[in-house]
Length: 573
Image (tube, rainbow, N blue to C red; front, side, top):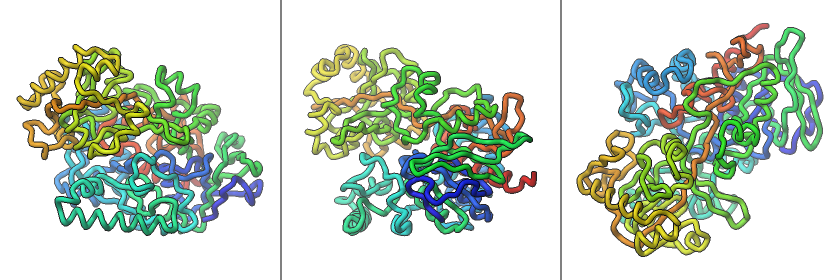
């Protein structure tokens, strides 16, 4: 693979490629890999200086039902069951034909990329669908995770991989996934956990002798590492960083045939014989589209990567492309907390599963009242924040025991090292609920009543207000080992008491360009714009803005990347 790190140096005007891919996140890299392993000459254009997009910051979970991995943990699952589930969860909020194409072709896409490259996935023993009380849902087998990746295999390419969010690492750059976290927390209680913990810490210490961060990659960083390594093995691929697309050109028959590129080192017009694949990450960093689609949601609350400017989408609309309609929401969501870093940037921390669903924690609005099931999916939680009164910001509340056990956002479990978080106001501490309410400027009576209700629910094991802890998904992200009658409920009674402010953060675009089952971009008449494809968050979500399971952005991105490439390379016109 040829890498142009500073733009277009060395790329001649008129250079011909089979396929041009716009964006080097998970979707774009997947398209490039599928194209390269089929022998195509492919150019990947990335406007930032790093590869990986938001995928590199994510958990990397890849939801593709029916793969050869599924039988290892759930041999009884069927695509008919998945169809039933999605029909109930998504319904008419997105075209069923695209879901059918995803389910039909998903197993083949995963099998192909694993057979022909070093990309590797594994099933997680228990990873439930998010709306697990719907017919057709399952506890495991559909969600895959990338196997850990050795970043040292990338050699000189390793610094080009977007680093993980610093707050998701420990020991100055050591990545950890939930398996690692569980071992680290249990290392004084289990020989197996101690052995695992010592091995990853020792590896990290050795890494730091020659690298700026750890090279044992997990989650989304591992997936991007796998894809980068696979692409680096292909001599037909070129990667141009710090490069923008300024126009997409068509011939006199209306077919996309070329793009014009711009960088600090020059401009170039390159030919795209088989087409152009849009994988630029969606609209989330476009201030105009944000104001239109996400009114009242500050860009500061968005934990997505910086490259999602919407520029490629604007070029496609100029060719007649239209956006999908009818979705539950134009974006996918998670509650986030904010903290200023020492370098002046803002850390945006998504509260996915590690704290808010655990016993001894509740979330209240400015009236001190609970307004949502704290153990629902992060998408529904953040939508609940926006739908409720006085819930932006909301307040995650915990007592001392819960904070020690689970941490709170950027505050790690253990209850130590709180001073920096207290000093800068990220964490609020008080000796009583009255004092906590006063510091937060919320209703003390409301907070006292919410805590009293929670404690009664915990004693009974039943949340009669929001039915917290009744589904398999909710129970899975609770803590059955806490010893309560309900794994998501625990009393809030041990002072001091703590709070962290939460905001609704858009974690990715759900509304993108309307496509068909081959990822071909459509115009207002429903006709294909020949030679133009959209995948990832540039493609309108096949889930219709619903978040039914973990990995429902990356999974379809991978599968439709394979379908886009297959269609483009087979097109003889």
